[in-house]
Amino acid sequence: MATRLSVITTRGGDDGTTGLGDGTRVPKSHPRVAALGDVDELNSVLGLLRAEALPGEIDTLLGAIQNQLFDLGAELCIPDHRAVQAEHVAGLDQAIRHYNADLGKLEEFILPGGSRPAALAHVARSVCRRAERSVVALEHESGPGGYARQYLNRLSDLCFVLARVLNRAQGTPDTLWRRD
Image (cartoon, rainbow, N blue to C red):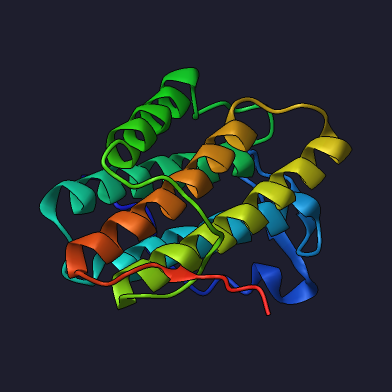
């Protein structure tokens, strides 16, 4: 494998800008940088979730998703580059159908919580929704993107479903919202 980074501290961002993959520099407050940061945070939260004892099939799925999120980061870092494709969105749709098939019908809203892995899946879901909002904001400024928005929308749904699956696997009931 080739060396990707030999110097971590470049001091190039000390002026409040950052370099994109195409060599241009933008302010660190730019919507593209915000979207990149939110996707990076989402990937980190999924890494934290994967540090838990998870069913092997779910850990493998999340590992593949982490790689796809890294590709999505490249898409956001390089204007006009497309890495996320329709088949990535379709794969999330299939995973949602697979994991949701054995869950009971939702009769009430579910609050984040339950087991630790499920609670972390809910954190990932909420961070994913923020990343989706950041991508939408970027699209308003830069024009429509590819499948990034749809991918993040489906991924947040999958995180919700996985939270329920992980609670069930731990023998922990979902935390239901109760009307006062």
